[in-house]
Structure formats: structure tokens, C-alpha cells
Amino acid sequence: MIETFKPEDIINIRKDFPIFNNFDKLNGKKLIYLDSAATSQKPSVVIDALHSFYSKSNANVHRGIYTLSEEATIKYEEAHKKVAGFINAKSFREIVFVRNTTEAINLVAYSWGRKNIGKGDVIILSQMEHHSNIVPWQLLAREKGAVIKYTEIDDKGKLRIDKLENHLKEKVKLVAITQMSNVLGTINPVKEITSMAHKAGATVLIDGAQGVPHEPTDVQDIGCDFYAFSGHKMLGPTGIGVLYGKKELLNDMPPFLGGGDMIKSVSFEEARWNDLPWKFEAGTPAIAEGIALGSAIDYLKSLGMAKVKNYEKELAIYAMDKLRDVDSIEIYGPPAGERGGIISFNLKDVHPHDVASVLSSENIAIRAGHHCAQPLHDRLGVTASSRASFYIYNTIDEIDALVNGLKKARKIYG
Image (cartoon, rainbow, N blue to C red; front, top):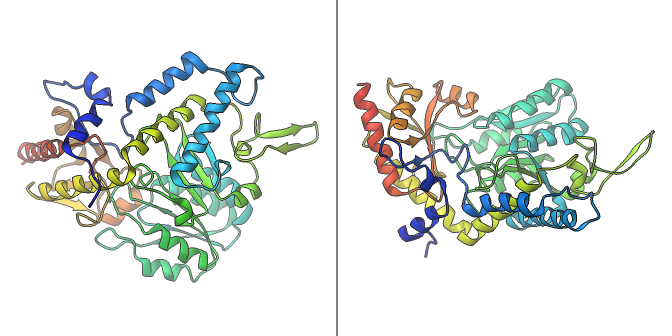
């Protein structure tokens, strides 16, 4: 039996999100939020965790020998352990808190990349990558004289594994690939890709920004060397993200930033680095945000990630079917049932910004633009697209409203 949410479950879940109560009216219409791929809404337990820290536990971590500081340190370190358990890392010492996925990838590019990538080395990406998993490697390749190769996608938006195999015959040092496309909803076989890359002697980084929030994730099972994701896309606050790295790799990497807390000792001549993960967490970290991320993980675990994945798949299948009722719509990416809860599309002869504007008048929030994936849009032959993305608080009725809003936009723009 497939684990999923029942309609009454979703009613109760929505009650946990204050924004659907506090901002539920605009021109007499309830808020329909379909932009969770950009950032998710926050449940009360996460908001309460932020408030509780600042009102009851506010102190710096790893600094003070007094009760408040010790309490803050315990909670902050406990959050690392919650993340480690959530993605099945071997140890919390493999969990580095950063600001977001972007910073996590930049950390690897700066610290691991500058030590291990040399002239003529090949970095493999894919055509569906977010700018965050392109630009850091472009900067590194330019500096080191390395070469970037992009694995192609087919016309259904799926990765060409045969093309990846061909690239892996070259002098490959790194494969950096997204777990789920933030435009196409394509779910890549990251375990298979990791195995292929390792056989070729390459290190593997997975961009899990659209992975961890939406499906069970086991980094040991995947086998990847690095895994990056953001808290704000998985019900947590902004300003907190995670880099998972295998302990032996993190130990061998130089620090990303220098300053307080990332050191064991400093003299006028030299410094000695702190233990993992603090070696990569210089200065005062995002303490409250880290603790609140732990609360978001507790919340997701209470729901069950298998249910989260299956429910979003149901929404995507329903949406793909209903969107066919809209005249002259082009949908990008894999078929229904083979994608995550992300659907990007265009209405013929209507700019995505105009589509988003019409939907906004109905209090339906979608994203319009290139979604930080300009190269992918070039591959699709368009400059921009409209994107609806789903999460645990969305409903079938909201998808029906989206379809009606698109029909309205089609009528307005002929």
C-alpha cells in the first residue's frame, strides 16, 4: 500500500502554517501558494523555535562558560545531529552549516576545488543545473585552466546517461549534478551517477536543494562525496543551509573562511584549525536559524518523507492531466509520474510575466522567469517560463484554481 496523505491530513497540515490564516484574503480570494521550489512556507513550530531561542536562550555558542551559552551550544549542536540523522550521514561532524545551497557549493569549489582541480581536468555538469551549480565551477575552471562538460538532456527533459558515460572517459575530477531539476521536475538517478563517477575516479557533489525537502534522502546509500541543500526550501528559515561532506574529504580541505571559532589556537605566526564541522563555520553562526532548521526536520519526520514524496507525485500527476485543458500550453520536462512536484510551462504568445500577473490577481503565487537556469532555457528554446511548484500544504482544489486562472489569462491575451 502506497503511503500518502488523506484530504483530512492536508486540512490539518495547513492549520500548522500561519500564513494561510493571516494572509488568506486578497480581493476576497484565499492565498494559493505555488512557489515552494523558490522557498517554502513555515509551520508554527519553526516560527516558535526562532522566537523561543531569542526570548529564552539567546547567547553565543562555543564561547561562554555560563548556563545560557551552554544551553545555546547544546541546541545548536543538536541541530547538526538532527540533520545528520535526517540524511543518514555517519556523523554530525560531516554536517557543516552554511547560509544556503549556493554557499555550500561555493565552499566545495573554493576549498576542495582549488586544492584538487588542475589544468586540463574535466568538471562534468548537466544542462539542467541551477546557476548555483554552474557559476562556481566556471570561476574555478577559469582560474585553474580546467574544462567544463555539460551532459545533455533529451527532449523529455531527462538526463542522457549515454552522454555522461562518454564524458566519464575523459580526465574527470568532479561530477556535480542536481538531484531534481528546479525547472523540469526531473529526478536524476543520483545513486547510479555516483557509482559511475566513482568508477571513473571522480568526486561527486549532489545539489539536493530540490531533493531533501521532497523525498527520503540517504547520503550513504547514494554514496556521494558532497551533498548541498537549503533550509528555507524544507520549511526552515532563510539564512541556513547544509553541506554534507565525507569526513576524510572535509579533514583534508583547507578552511573556507578564517576567523573566530574555526580555530583551535592562533599565534602571531600561524593558526591551527578546529575540529569538524566547526573548522568550516567561522564567526558567529546562524544559531537561531540552525535550531529552527532542526525543528523543521522534526516536523517533516513526524509527517513521514515517503508520504511527502507520494503526495507531491499525486499532485503532479493531477496537475499534468488538468493542464492539458488549457489551450496552447507547452509543458516542459518528463511525463506525469516521472517527475517531482514542479511543472514549468508556457502559454503560446503570452509572456510568463503576464501569466503570473493574471494569476496574482487571483491571489495565486507562481514563479515567472528563467528560475536561475538560463542555460536550460536556452536548451529549451525559450527565454523564460512559468513555474508552479507544490508542497505538503497544497491541494487538488488549488490546482483547479491554477488551471482556471490560466484559462483566464488565455482569454485575456487571446
